[in-house]
Image: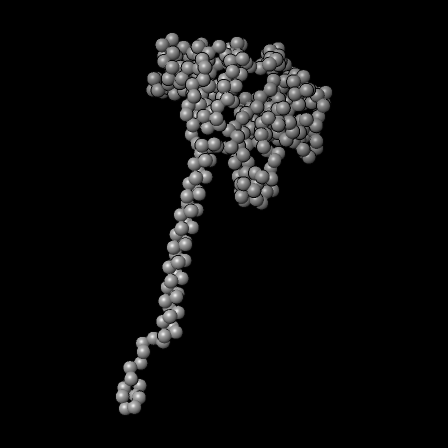
Length: 320
């Protein structure tokens, strides 16, 4: 730019813009510092909440030795020393209702995390007893056990170790069923997604064709004119007995209604069911119904579970 014959140098930046730029830099700096402080506070609060939750709810607690309960190592040493197999190897435990009640009460007195850790590592109810013996035996023999050998390490509990109060079994019914007495049958309480279909397939391989209902071991499909199946609670004992004997069926599955302890035990039947780890059972049902689009269109398992209150504690509800 020329002024009075002299070249005047143009300023590189207008003063107003330069001032605005400085103010903007200050604001950005303050914002970044505030953001860093906020992130730090949120992270600190998250860590604090995690520590509290881990201590009170989910954290792994110390394993507590329960009174009169040998550890798994002690059980294994006793088994090896005595050369015992099956439930007879647990001679150190008195067994019976009072024994297991005492264990349950001891566990109930612990913190939840301690109780879970103790159940997992000490196996106080011996739910892993058979698996341990099976692994030990097959490892020592370096082969898979035969059916007869498996029966030796997995017998029924001894009388003094059983906890059924009162003992509702009728041995004569079991003997009549084994003898093929007409009118006797196996009452199977089918819990959804807990191996019931496999159980029915097993029955089909061991029963004559004419002794099997045509639809998944559920005789009431035919009784209802192909409208319902697995609703034995809706039929009286007299109707069940008469129809089962007339048709010669030897298994009856009850899937969609609860087991009625007030009258079903009066049937000329033996009784069976199958259980599955509750979380696995629930997830399997969610996959079967919702993921595979069998009448359910919810794809979030948490939303589905909140709506399916009928499935909460389903085992207790079925038999209580």
